[in-house]
Image (cartoon, rainbow, N blue to C red):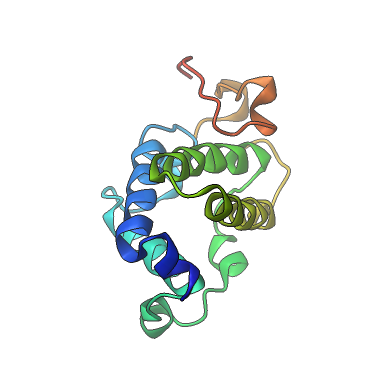
Length: 153
């Protein structure tokens, strides 16, 4: 039995991704990184990728080829702030999935490593609000990505 099967298959990954994109839609730094106004196509791509990675259907590879995550993210300004915001959004999705502690830890370990690997710049500006106008994540956010800020940029 694969990790995909153990956690509940497509239904579980779809739920995580849906919550993740619900959070992304509210983030002034991440939302502009998604070219489609409707986040549905991005959500489908991420769902297919996660399904394939964790032992589910190989639909992602059949439709899009090798994931090439670093290459696909090069056009976007992924700095540590964007990474931490991405992790915060994903943390909400993973938490709302109510996985077993072992499955949650395994999935989260991968997501953190992947997020850190996607950082492609340390410059403080790019797509989204200028760095000076951003609401920085709270000081502890880098250590605790689930922490939310209630400030508006």
